[in-house]
Amino acid sequence: MIGEVPNVEVGQEYRTRRLAHEAGVHRPLQAGICGTMRTGAESIVVSGGYKDDEDYGDVIVYTGHGGQDSAGNQVSNQSLDDPGNAALVTSHLEGLPVRVLRGWQSESPYAPRTGYRYDGLYRVTSYGSKLGIDGHLVWQFRLEAYDDTPMPEVPQQQEIPATSSATASSGDVPAVHGNELPERVTSTVQRIVRSSAVKRQVKAWHDNRCQICDLRIEMPGGSYSEGAHIQALGSPHNGPDTPGNVLCLCPNCHVMFDNGAIVLGDDLSVIRGGGAAGMLRIDPRHAIDLECVRKHRKRWRL
Amino acid sequence: MIGEVPNVEVGQEYRTRRLAHEAGVHRPLQAGICGTMRTGAESIVVSGGYKDDEDYGDVIVYTGHGGQDSAGNQVSNQSLDDPGNAALVTSHLEGLPVRVLRGWQSESPYAPRTGYRYDGLYRVTSYGSKLGIDGHLVWQFRLEAYDDTPMPEVPQQQEIPATSSATASSGDVPAVHGNELPERVTSTVQRIVRSSAVKRQVKAWHDNRCQICDLRIEMPGGSYSEGAHIQALGSPHNGPDTPGNVLCLCPNCHVMFDNGAIVLGDDLSVIRGGGAAGMLRIDPRHAIDLECVRKHRKRWRL
Image 1 (tube, one colour):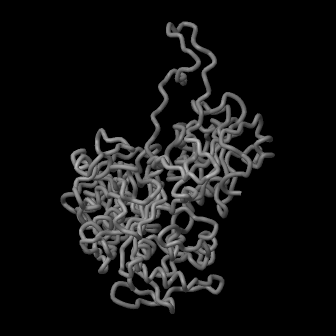
Image 2 (image 1 turned 30 degrees about the vertical axis):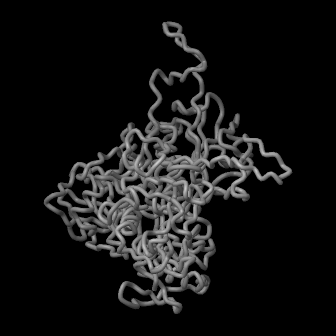
């Protein structure tokens, strides 16, 4: 289950991993990443197991899985072949939301003091490898909170150093591990187009191959394409969110199609600037809605 | 001036267009769109001059300029050659923010009762033509509020129909033109990558031609490219926001570069999957930061 879990609110706390498991928020009892390369990552737990992690509240730099011995020391390189890491790459390429939980073990100021807390949906905005603190290669994933995901709460410090001359009243902004809270980090622009279920279906039928130019973009973690609505959703276009109104396109054909540099004829011919330029590649499972094709063409006066 | 005007807050009201002009929020005294094809649109005023307009608060369907006689009747087709309309196309292609003002003349429930109100920054997420209510072609631009732009206020109705049996207390949700408030409209995904000043400079040097594959995407309103950071901003990559760390790329090469399917050698050779594949096209005005090139390559273990 990708995305929100019904009846679970952001900020919900779980005393144990088993309770989070039973709620369906994070299903594995031990693994930090739940998901597969095919489906993407459902959820992750930030719980201090990897010392290269960074936590800014609305931005998390999350270290992938693997390469540790049973005592938790990093003793070898991590790999994108690890199913959890591959799941996070898929979440990135598909623009899918990931549920984030924080656990008490994390040293982050945003971690709960006890148990585990569900902190809402994040997206994977980039990833890459680096030499970790322990001298082995780690893969790291940058997760950013969606704009409507609230900033996680910082638990009040309960022990105020006795030597401090300033008296902290509980209503003040809490001191956090002796430091200021990091400033809210400015988001980088999201380059990946989020795939809805309808778009994922269409992309799967076409195996990520562009229906206009036939390109399939191959990347380290898998292939990439975008689901493009023929008639845009919302006013003034009001297209339906159905497979018949979605094409599987490469980013270049997508931006051209969305801006009228490419339209389709009623026979599904591809029309660019001057005239026809081949045919849309079709698949028998994917019936194109010709009414949408016509309205898109009219939008561009063609 | 694109974006926010210093010292002007969202919700600021102006009794007259001249006062809005003096504040620098919307500079023309009559025109509804301020801007040019080259710079994009600085600001627009939603003031009821075009009956095809729609206003949902955080989403506005804004009719372009032109085709009206002096009495305000639509008597001919609108054109993208109109400088105001061309400015809004540029705002769309560049992902630039547009200041939105609402005027008392608009019949929208979100319009102020008197004068003009600055309602914050919106982006142009799509546009297209349609046959307008008066039977002539109009161009329409969908504007969506940024996530941090507050929903505009709905003024209280001051005249409660005397025949109404229900007594409305002023603290209640106001009735709006006899109807319910429209629900907050779900945003469509933003396909266009927002250009910062640094990115715009790099794209201008390269005239929107991809430095990797040499493609320049031509669209009805102009050409299109994307500014791509070599080393991503923010943790864990922490690249600088300087021209030396930005490339001008087409969307396909951008997504491949961001995901390690393309890296650059120290000699600016283009390295794909197996090996070298030509050289990055350079421009004498645009010095590439080799330190960033190296760090990007290392991120992908190459």
